[in-house]
Length: 500
Image (cartoon, rainbow, N blue to C red; front, side, top):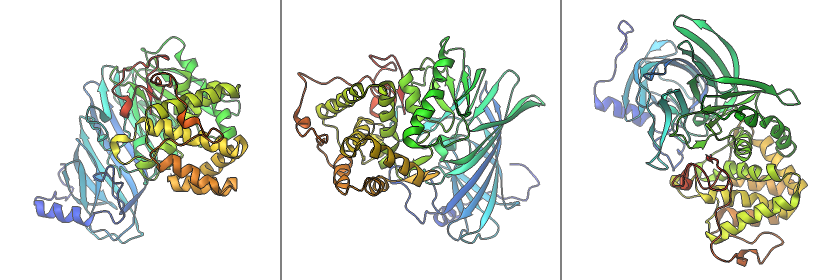
């Protein structure tokens, strides 16, 4: 604790208990991860000033949060794990605080009325470490340090490993990052690079993300990079960061996103952010890619075209439109898997249909349950990826490609910058298509146990290949996260790590 700031850390457990009780959420937190988040507050902006030492990993930081109270607050809490707080100020005045079990409980000097905006400034430091992944205890989430530098992959609840966060998916905020690193290193974060320059002891990189972002999509990565700068035909800037572990042509392979963006725009509408980019991580522990907003994260050697399309599609589905509850994560992964399949088959409808029916055979063979899942251990399962993509394909078969594209564009347009549920998607599909029977079709795919027949193929559910159906050669399946984590880091048939 810094001296002379007139602040007092709560010494009594009873005081902490009162604060935590006072900050219990007025609205239900997502039942999959109820220990994270606080729905009595709404964070509008995070300004993170980070000084990073990669080896050994050390972080000294100040986080300034602009917050709106959603209820009268005598106290509130934020998620912060493994880092030591030295001071907290609320509206410029020192506040009482206590840390326990990954929570930062704060009691301001004055009560905050519902609807009031207030500023929270937290000074903290330490050696950041990842936390256990609640979807699978074999995995870790958050801030990682390795021989080359540091990186962050946080889905679903790892943001608290490097900043005080309201770490739940509905509280989206804008971000700014000012990251100081030693000479020879660069810092990459979400959004637009506003500036880079020398400061005492190293270099400082300033990034901003002006579009709302959910906390688990925030990333800061520090390493020695090669940079390829390019742009789409429409002028959208792309920044491709690769490391020494990348293949000789990987930067150009990641840059294929500049052709994919206008293609996806014809279906989903305008790209939702000011820039796009990707950054590779040469840590062998990382065996999946992640759609960190406007700056996708890839493991080295994973420049598979399908994987690039998968993470790019997430910028619309998962990022611009985020899920309101984790049970509906198929809205993100289903669309990403759909575009992963569509992109390489975009010029031949027969090939696309063949690929999707291969997914269907797999779903029937494995008796995949509904796309909407029941608990957090299932959010990276085949149900989400495969049956999610098939839900969209079934809708496309039912109403036709043009109407399907209109539904997709309307869904993004209605919920861009916010959150959506499966029922939001169903309502949009019914309204835009004008076909009331779409409701029954989608609910069968999303909620019913048996795999439904594909429209126009009533015998499809019974059609089986001789013997077990192999896992489709999609980069999002067979390796990577969730149910795919137990598989090898290299997927049979395509040589690519998995996708999230």
